[in-house]
Amino acid sequence: MKHNITDMTHAQFSDWLTPIVNCPLFESRERLIALLAENADRAALETELQEFYEGYCGLAFELEEPEESLLSILRASDIFAPLQKRVVAVEAVRKTSPAGRIARRMNDRPLITDPQPEIKVTALLDDAFRGLMETLANSELFAARAQVAKLQKAAPSVEQTGQLKSAFLEFFLCYLELEQFLENYYYDPDEGLELRPEVAERLERSVAEHESGKVKGIPIEEVAKKLGLKW
Image: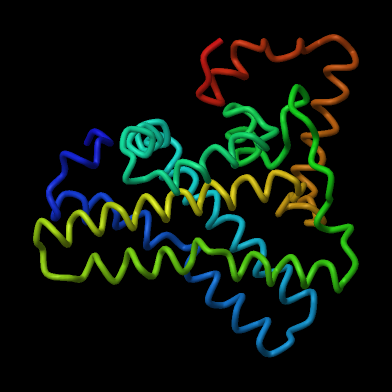
């Protein structure tokens, strides 16, 4: 389905929204809120952060393709003037390229051609780490999502459909703001996990083969193809 939401009926739009507003990020956020409320230890918060980040990547995957279409809709009407100002604010401070944002979500590492994140999550002291968790849990994205879910359940009408689409664009902008916030942080959800012996052996063998010249490096065109990028 094309991503011009202005042409969608209420039913079409609601169906299109379903995987977006029901992605695992929102369940993880509820668990994170509960952990913070019970003053859970850092280990528990770190475990949930892995789920939260994976859910965020899932949401980003859903919104990645329609992003330009949604931005075009926001820019096309003065009705969205307040949102337009927030879009400009996000784009003014973005440091990573579109390809870099995709790469970070795919392999959790920024492209070397992009500015590197300033803050390593695992290096944060306990108070700062908890503060980050509270900031993420209280992101405006979640209030915007609740409004979208509420309007989704309302009886279909021209007015309700318009309100739902406007609420979704607000949600989309909150997502962009969360994405921009996260680009300042380096986080690898697999960091610290123990490699299985057979995986470690394969990595060591691969390194040895590269160093001996038996295996050449992967061409940049192939890397770009794997990332879904044009080269």
